Structures are given as C-alpha cells and as structure tokens.
Image (cartoon, rainbow, N blue to C red; front, side, top):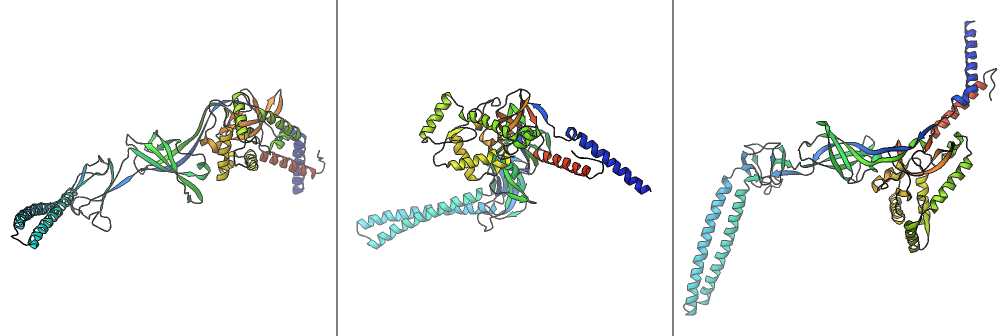
Length: 510
C-alpha cells in the first residue's frame, strides 16, 4: 500500500509540474534578448607566451697558445671591455723562440752584407777578366740566397712575436663573463694547433641587448608580426615590466605534447643589466590597440547563415529580413563621390572597365586576377562565423589575392570597407591586424522601437567586443541574442517537456 501511495504522489507531482510548464512555457523558457547601447571603449588585443631570456650572441674564448695558465684576471659576472686582458698563459717557451728568431735575423743580415761585399769584388775582377764567368755567377747566387734567408728570418721573428703576444688572452668583445671553464694551473691546448679546436677558457656575451625565445601557440601566431611592441615580465622584477619588440617568427614549429608552437624572437634593451640569461619570462605581444572607438558586443553579431534563426526568435519574417539586408547593402556598393569616385573611375578605366565587388565596394579587377576567385574568397570570409579562424585558414594564394585587392581598391577611411563610418576614427586597421579583422556582419538594432537588421563592418576584436567601422553610430541600441546552439537546446527542451506531459493521463498539450 505504501508503494502504491508513493507512485500516486509522484504521478500527481509530474502532472502539476508539466501543466505549469505548458501554461507558462512561453514566458519562462522562451529565448530572451538584451538591449545594449553602442558606446566607445578601448579595444586591446594581445598574445601571451612564456620564454627564457638568452644573450643574442655568445662568444667562446680560446687561446692560440698552449701551456699552463699562469694568471686569471676575471671571474664570472665581470664586465670587460674589448682587448682587456683575461688570461695569461706560460710565456717561457714563446719568449725563448722570440729570442732565437731575433738572433737568426741578425745572422741573416750579416750573411747578406757579406754576400753583397763579395759580389762587388767579383764585379771588379770580372771587368778585368781576372775571374771566370762561373765564379761571377756564383757570387750573384750567394747574394740572392742571403736575401731569401733574411726574409725567412724576418718571417720567423714576426711569428715568434705573435706567439709571444698570444700568451695574453684578451677579450674579443665588450661584454660579461657568463661561464669560466679553467683556473690557474690548468694546462690548455692551442685553438689553432690542435685538431679538436683547443680548450674553451670561458664564454662571454654582450648583455646590453638580450632576447627572449617565446613559444607561441599556433592559434595566436597569425596575429603576430615583426616589429610589434612586447612587454616582458620576470619573476625577479614582477613590478617592473620590460619593453621590447618582435624580431622575427621562426618558420619551423615545435610540437610538445601534441601542441604546435612557433618560436618568436623578442629583442629587449637591457642597459641596466637586470635581465640575466636563463631567467624565465612572461611575454605579452601587443597585437592591436584601438582607443576610444565605437564597439559592439560580439554576441550581437550575426552572419548571413544564422540571421534567419535570429529573425525567428524576434518574431520577424526571415524572408523580409533578407530583403531588408540586401536593400541596405545595395546603396553601400554604389556610394562614392568626389575625388574618391574620380580615382575609382580612373582605375576602372585603366583596368579595362571590369570591376568586382570586394568588401561591399566596387573596385577595378586587378590584372591577371580571376573574378570567380575574388567572389569565392569574399564568400569564404563573409560566411565565416569565426573570422580569426577564417583568416588563419587562408592559403598563400588567397592571402596574395587579398593584397592585390587592397592595393586595387584602397582602404578608405574605414579600413577594409572603404567607407568611413561612425566607428572610423583615425586610421583603419593595419596589415598587422589582418588575423583579427572582423569583416561583414548583421546586427539587429532598435529603429523606431522595432528590431531592424543592419549590416555592419567590424575591425579589431578582442573576442568580446569588435570595433565598428560602419553601419552603427553612437547612441544606437543593438539586441544581444542567444547563440544558435542555445536556441536549439531550448527548443529541444521544450519539445521534450511537451512529450513527457503528453504521456501523463489528464494532461493535454497545446
């Protein structure tokens, strides 16, 4: 009996809940939207990565002389200037060779003087025919041999002087001693006389400018370009950021635990010498910065593919909405007057009169460019729900085509669209923002109290807000709607609730 009573209570509870859901379902679970006014804000985009501080160039210091180290003048961490004495090697053997070379030079000079004196006497005797021709030629040969001996002695002396100087190892550059491998009493081998390359005495580097080799995820690498400003922080100076710039992006990726990363080299001035090789650092690359621009929430943006579902949510006719969007875009393609129109007409005339629509603007078709390729690229970008991924997926040919189209159509005041708008304050997006350019979207704005589809063109985005280049003005109000996936899940939940209520006796579905 208790079990039957519990079953009856459970069925009754289900009936009550299902009836309440069906009676109030339109008010409680229906999709809602928020009204967000368009205003100005700062949009800052950055890419973060980790890296290690390292010197730009490391120099290995070796000795041309072999022998025992007699004197060590430096320690690790010492700052030295170029040609400063670092190490003194046993000089006794080179100095003995130097004395021998000097004595050989004196002997060679004396032998040459003696040979020249004999040649002068032979010349006098040869004129009087007191000696034979062979004796005279022998005297001349003795002088030539003495001269050659003198040259060899001079060369040996120069070599001995160099060998004596090589016992003093001097700094090849100005920098800091970062590694020291030998001490006083160590026996080293020559870097020039030994096949193995000789003994490395120490390593030094110039730390006035250092670099960080940061590993950037492949999803962010498309945002980064050489020359971008970078902020670096290290654990030793957490409240003191260091400023640098991107030097280059290495072409070969590294894969670690199935994650593809690209090394990015960042140069940082280190005049105070605070950054040490081996320090772990956090790198923040400043990809884009827009100050005081009109911005729209990214959740308010709709593509051509999902604008129909958004219209249904608002109770609008999807076909009527599509007609409104097409009508709003047509005038935008025909706009242009004054110098800009004359310039476009001249470009069109020089291109043979054939034009193509690119970014909502008629531009002359560049020479050698296929109009079908332009339309395919435009459809690919304008139909993408995620513009960052769309730009990263472009092939090299498509990127080159974009450059040709930009050169042919210009950027105008509003960036890629070519039309200035309320959001076009100052210059439009630069080439370094290519991976973050939003493109063309549709928003639903309140016009005369009615949700109205409005085509907009966006610029830099931080994934929360996008810069407005055209289509909206300050004071407009846009509708932030649920995503398509959320709408689908809500509809599925409603249908599931209706099915459950339909299976309960005494409950009717509408």
